[in-house]
Amino acid sequence: MNDLTLTSAPGKSIISNCVKFGRQSEEHKKILYALREIMTWNSFAESLIEQIATRGSLSEKQMFAASAMLMKIKQNKEEKQSNIVSIDLSNVKKIFDKAHEAIKSPKFRVDNMVLSRAPDSGVNAGAIYVKVNGEYAGKVTGGYWLPCRAPEGTLEKLQEIAKDPLGSAVAYGKRTGNCSACGRDLTNHGSIEKGIGPICAERWGL
Image 1 (cartoon, rainbow, N blue to C red):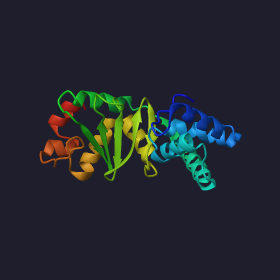
Image 2 (cartoon, rainbow, N blue to C red):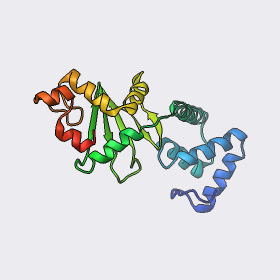
Image 3 (tube, one colour):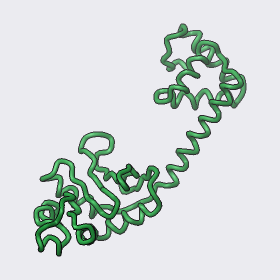
């Protein structure tokens, strides 16, 4: 228990209080370790660990609140994992990589969806972000779809786009009169017929 980083109590008393708390019951021990795992990003968990370290106890109300919070976090994690679906967006990633040679932040529009390429630096490098009706709906990374409050049918639309990115772009352009790549009005007759502007078609390799 000596890896706790707390400054409000001397080191020995921190260890003693945490050991004392953990020995009260198996439930206390589980709560102690679960709170320690999330205290770096959860301020409530951090405050509870602080109290355990300084007093060696939590009130009955605090124990209930801690249990409820930990259960909610576990449920959210399980729900998120159950929603993860394998999807092959290699065709989409290919056109994004091509577009990125000429466009810093390329975007691809289909129906009410906008796909965008994550920056090359950062934890999401290589991911494709998905927005539906202007709201973030999830991302595709490592070959998996990770939804975030995505409307029903989003995955199916992504799968359709993945099969034929060019066909999706052309259909969008013909239906809306806007280029799927840049979003501008298609004014040239040939572009209207093709559903995508010639410059964007070349940039995106479509």
